[in-house]
Amino acid sequence: MVKTCLFVNNREPYPETCFDHISGIDMVWYQDHSDRFSLEEAITNNPTTEILITTLMDWSAAHLKQFPNLELIITITTGTDYIDKNYCQQHNIKVLNTPGFTGTSVAEHAVALMLAAAKRLVDFNHKIRTGDYQIFEHQGIELFGAQAGIIGMGRIGSQVAQMLQGFGINVVYCNRTQKVSDFGVQVDLDTLVNTSDIIFLTLSLNETSRQMINQDTLAKVKPGAILINISPDDLIEFSALQSALTKGQLSYAGLDIHHEDDRFLNLPNTILTPRRAWYTQAAFERRIKIFSQTLADYMQTQH
Image 1 (tube, helix red, strand yellow):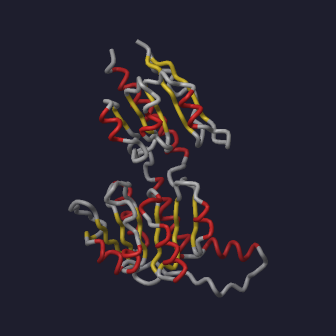
Image 2 (cartoon, helix red, strand yellow):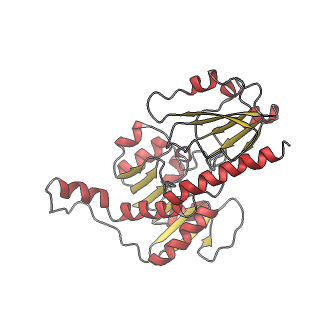
Image 3 (cartoon, one colour):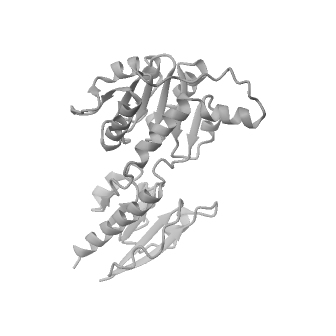
């Protein structure tokens, strides 16, 4: 029996041959990273979809219910928070993600954001390109002997902690569960934000972590700390971040933003990247291999 599959993607294009080795599927590709992309059009034109393969976008119940035959969603992302899980449970729709495809790419990007923020690289680059060689207002931060606090000591957080050892940075971390690490000491959140010169957010979004970096949290931050986020934007309360950067409670922030939100463009003392922490050739190839194998494994169970 042939399964009708829909690949929906408004980001970097994937080769439309990556599922050719899988039998028993009828694959429809809806890829467009331009302004012409329309999720509503993708849904309306493919009502018989049984397997949905998707990147980050709005999969609320209102959209999912337009696929009455849907039985499986494969996200080509690690996170699945943008999918209405309650609807899926009620309708026996299985949700599978693409774990581990980033390798060390995201951790490396987090460290790169730290270096750019601590050394004011963006500011120096801008000034010198405008002919200003006498730059005194942007003073960097020495990292050797500083303390980094990592919120979320999973795979990526652990990689960041390991990389920081080479800079002579002391590491503390907080985690939902007790975890022993050779690269740092576990503390509570208040201790972490009170004592850390650099704070890394390396955790997934859920109801517990949503806006965990808020006005109360930032009021406890060590004055002049740097905030680095390679996790979903919604971990941070925007107005609180804006206030902390404006008042200097945070000296700088490095953010790999996930949504097209123009408010970020007006934040002072920030370096921004567009959800590209993972984007290396190795990670791209690994991602394709993992999500295509996920589909292949699922189809094997259907025979």
